[in-house]
Each structure stands twice: as C-alpha cells, then as structure tokens.
Amino acid sequence: MLLLLKIFARTLACLPEAFVACLCRFFGWLVELFMPRRSRSTMNSLSHAFPDKTEQWRKTVFRRSAVHLFEMGLFRPASAYFSQKRLEACLEIAPEAREIIKKYEEGGAKHGQPVVIMLPHMTMSEAATMLPARAPGLKPVHVIFRPLNQPSISRWVTREREKFGANLISRRKGYNDAMAALRRGEILAVLFDQDASKKGSTITFMDRIVSATDLPALMAHRFGADVFLMLLERQGFWKAKLTLQQLPLGDSPAETTVHAHDALEAYLQRDTNTAADWLWLHDRWDHFYSSYKRFSFPEKRNEIALSNRLHGYDKLPRKVRFWVRLPNWLGDVVMALPVLRAIREARPDFEFTLIGKAGFEPLVDRLGVADHFIPLPKRGSGYFCAFYRMRKMYPDTYYILTNSFRGDLEAYLTSCAQRFGMVRPGKRRPLLTNAYHLSEDIDERQLHQTSVWEGMARKYGLKGAIDYSPVKQTKIEKCPGRVGLICGTENSPEKRWPVEHWRSLITGLLEVDQVSEVVLYGTPADRTITDQVAAGFDPERVWNLAGETDLAQFCDELSGCELVCCNDTGGMHLANMLGTPVVAIFGPTNPVRTGPIFSTPHRILQPDGCPATGGVPIREVSPQSCLQAALEVLSTNGR
Image (cartoon, rainbow, N blue to C red; front, top):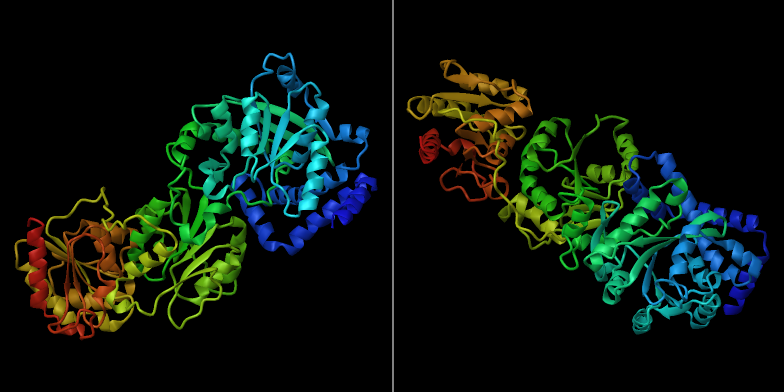
C-alpha cells in the first residue's frame, strides 16, 4: 500500500497543477452529487454562519470548500516529490509575520520565550511544517499531529513532514514531549478543533455552542507562553501565505480559546475566498446533536458565561433552529406548553419556531415560547410544496407533537436531519429519524397528556423540572363578579352539557351576590347553542359573545373573568393556562388524561359513580352541583 501511495504521490507531483486542480474540482462535484447528507449538513452550517448571505453565495462557498478539501489531501503526498524551488513557491511568509518571527530567532528579543501556535483546519494547513525551512534561525518548532492507522504509511508521512525541520509529536502519547519543548522555551503548534467531544470546553463559535479544544490554551497558561493564531491563507492552487496574529493570553485557558475562535471567525467573515478556506465539510457543531442529550445543556467544562461576557452578550444567542409541529387542537397546544417551556429553559440557544394552524398565531404570541410562527399552508395541491420550500430555512431539529403521517411528511420535506416524534404500540412512523417508542406498559388512560409528552422530552435529555405556573396576562384586570361559560365543544357533541343545565346554572348564578354578569363564549359554530342558552335572560347581565371574538380577544376575555364554567374543551385549557379558576364538567371523556394541568384553582365535576377516567353521560352532572362548585371557587377567591 505504501508503494502504491508513493507512486500516486510522484504521479501527482509530475502532473500539471492545472490538471490536478481540475481533478480536485471533479472530486468536489462528486461530494455534492453523491453525499447529500454531508452537503446538507455543510449548507446548514453555512446558513448559520452567514445568515445575511444569499443561498447562491453559500453554495459557492460550499463548492469551493469541497474542492479545497481534496486540494489539501493531495498536497501532502505530492509535496514529498516537489523540487526545492517549487516548495518555496508554495509558502509565502507575510512581511508582518517575518517581523514577528525575527523576535523569536536566535538573538531575538524573545528567543527564550515559549510559543504556542494555534492552527485551524485551513486548506493549506499542511504547509505549516515548512516554516522552519523558511526561517532557519528560528528556534525548534514542534507540531502535534494525529498518526495514521497504517504504521508504514504513518512513518513515511511523518518523515516527509519532518524533512523541513519541524519535529512531529504524536497526539496519542507525546504530550510530555510537547510540555518539555515549552519548558525549554521552544515553539509548539497545535491544530485546534471545534468538535472535541467531552474533552473540550463549551464555548460559542459563530454564536453557536461548540466543544472546543482547550489543550493549546492549557499549555500556554501553564508555561506562560506567547500565543499566536497561524493562518495559511490560500493564494492559489497549492499556494499559501503564512500570517501570524498574536492572541491575548487572558485570565484563563478558556479565555484564550475564545479569543482564538473570535480571530478565526473574523477571518472567515472577511470575504468569499477566506470563507471557503476553512474545511466546512467537517461539521464543527455536531457534538451537541446527539438525540439523547438534545434537550440538555453541558454541565462540565461549560464556559458559556465567560464566552457571553467576552462577546458582550447578556444571554446566549438563540441560533439553533428548533421547530415544533403543534397539535391540531387548541387544548392539546395548551397542554404542550409546560414541556415546551422546559425545553426552552434547558436550551437557551434554541431558536423556537412553532408551526400550526394560522388561527393559533395570536395565542403563540402570548405564550412566550416562540421566536417565530409558521402558519400551516392552505390545504390543496401546494400544501406539501410549501414544506419542501422550507428546506432552505435549514431547521436543525423538528419536534413533532402530532401523531399523523402528514405531520411526519411535512418534517421530512424540509430536509431536517433530526426529526423527533412519538410512536405508540402497533404504529409505524418510518419518516422519523429519532422515535420515542411509548412503552406498552404505559396506560395512557392513567397518565396526563402533558406527562406523556414530558416522557418523550426526557428521552431526548430534558432534565429540568416542568413549570405548571399559569401565563399571567398582566395588562388584563379581572371584572368583579364576571363568570364565563363555554357551552360548546369543537368536536364530540357528547362532551356538551345540555342546554337546560346551562340555563339552570345561569339562573342560580344570577341569584347570588358574588355574580354580576354571565358571559357566554364560543366559536361561530357554537352560536346556535349559546342562543338557546341565553334566550330570555336579561341582556344587561347575560352576554352572548359566541362567534364574536378571535383567539386573542378570547384570551383577554377569559383573563378578565373571575371564574369559567365549561365543558371539556380547548377554552377550558386556555382559561386554566391564563390563571382563571375553572369549573370543568366531564362525563364520557377522561380528566386524568386531558384535565386542567396548570396550577390555577380548578374543580372537575363528574357524574356520581363515574370512574376517574370517565365514561358516563355528561348530562348526569346536575346544575346544582355545578352551581355549588362555582360558588365555592368564588368564595375561595375572596368574593
């Protein structure tokens, strides 16, 4: 294999550079054509790093970076057979860098000062080993590298790298040698990475968290070394200009690491050429994408607070695109809120985009958990095309709270690489990438829907407590003595309390001092019912607003009530969420699973003898029991 590599390398060195450059472009084209997941991941990273650039600009950077990956890979073996003149043409040292180098040459002002060079993964980073040959008076230079798995090839590559004067130190077992070199006041060059797994420090790079290599900074602080960022700026095919930028040592290794990444970011943001000079195909942000820890934040080696302080941020920028497909029913949306709040609290870097029915937007604006809202497209031939177009918005994680194939297909069409959802026993959801399989041992009749969603979030790493406190509408004042009634339901007529029961309740309410007015709420479809309920009552004390409020106004109205009496419907959950006490009437449906969940005073009424999980006709709940419960709640509220 080594012989074949040498033959290949010599052939590359003999070929015209223009031909090899075309070969690299061909390989780069193959990446785009046959590695769609890698291409998508790279374009995702570029969309985060350069949100103000056009999609075409980012695609140009991606294509150039893919080509440069092969340019870098072919440079090392081919350069082993370059002539001295050709080698010298490969590396230009910037005048400013030469002035810095002179200080560390023998007789220079800083000859005995140890130096740590932080080297990012640039197209021509391999040319860094040529520095000693171009600066003969420079004190010894050591480079930490990763040996290859094939021993004979690794020895040959190491020998070829060292022929320019640099001493290569294996990262597997050479750290003592590296520290000894710094102790002697010599130079150590280290590649610094942004995907160092559990061994790295968590900082922000381009406003997204990464696990950054902190070894160079640790060594620099231990020996009081000068620290430089070395950039091998690509000047043409197999040609680079070496520049050095001194970095402040700072008060801690993490601070030095942050400064190095800031300097690298400034370079990448400079123009199209420098943006493409980095190896974007290596996803630097994927360490925190593991599904089992997606909703948790790193606790060990977490330097986010320091990173925010150095960047002047009050809080971590929300740059990770977290999309949530909301349920289709209002009550389910409200029941999902505690879990969504917990995820948002656990991942302060998540930018929340909620997707749901257009009518939910006024509610979403009040929930405080969304940065953006995408209304579902109108049903028709263009419905799924709209989701396909969303792929250029590059969502990072798609959290699906529906249980339908349609919701899964919506997520799939966005090309989101991480699609979470729940799979119940006996069901299949093949379009999910990360499925939470609900255990057959779980009896959902005995578990609240919010708790079921909490279990799924825990599967994906959520650790914090669930907050069930209501969403207070601080600008809305309670109307003394106002009682709201929600007489209809969006679906399931069997969940509706009979009209005559509502009329009896109103009669009883109007006879007590605690109640000054009764307001009927509902959708336009509920108007038939509310007209029957309100017929014959004093319109100054019984208002019929069914069908006359949009969702935002409905929220304001419910917030202004002292009490809401209702069926098992979305308005029940809404009032409970907004902090308004609720008396909820259940019969055939299951309050254990879908009852009020927020820590607002509420009473659940069921027919006598009804199981806790429901199953008895709702008409068997008497108006007298509802009136008594309402008066008890009003009395508890101080009326």
